[in-house]
Image (cartoon, rainbow, N blue to C red; front, side, top):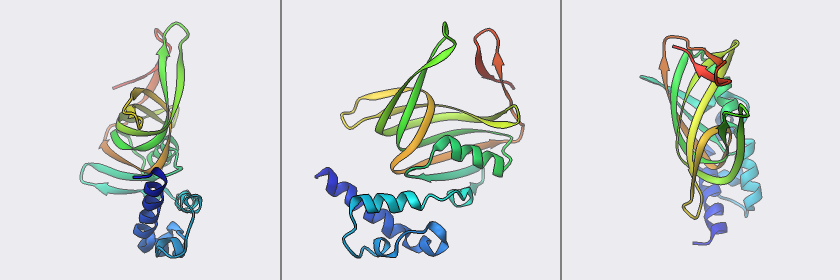
Length: 195
C-alpha cells in the first residue's frame, strides 16, 4: 500500500480510538475523532502531538509487578520516564519497551570517555531494555536498544535520546523496593549502577 495512505489511515484510527478519551482530556479534535472532514495528514499528526499533554498520570497504569506506560508521538521517552519516576517515587526499576521513534544511539569511546552519537529517524524499536535508578537526587535512566529501518537494517547501542515517532511506545516497568543509585566509576569515567 502507498505510504501516505497508510499514514493517513493510521492517524484517523488513532483519532477514532481516542474519541472516547477526548472528554477525558486528550484534547483530540472531534472532527478527527469522528472521522469527519478531510483532515490532512499534517493536521492529524498535529492532533496526536497536541494530545500528548504534560500530564504524566494519563500515560501509565499500575500492574501487579510495576507499571505499563504508553507514550505517544512527540513524547520524549527519557523526559516522561523521569517525570514518572518522580511522581511515583520509584526506588528502582527495570524496563523493556517497543514502539516507533527517532533514536539517538551512543557508542562509548573509553579513550575519550565520551559517547560517539548517531541519530536514526523513523525507526521501529524492536527492543529496548534498561533500568531506572537515582543519581544525585534525580532519576537516572539507562537504556539500550535495537532499531530497524524500512529496509530491515538494524542499529543498536546505548540510547542517549529517544522521541516517540509515528504511533506509540509501550513500556513495561518492573518495580524494585530497594532504592538503587548510580555513580561515576573513576576507572572508566562512566556511570555504574550500585547494588
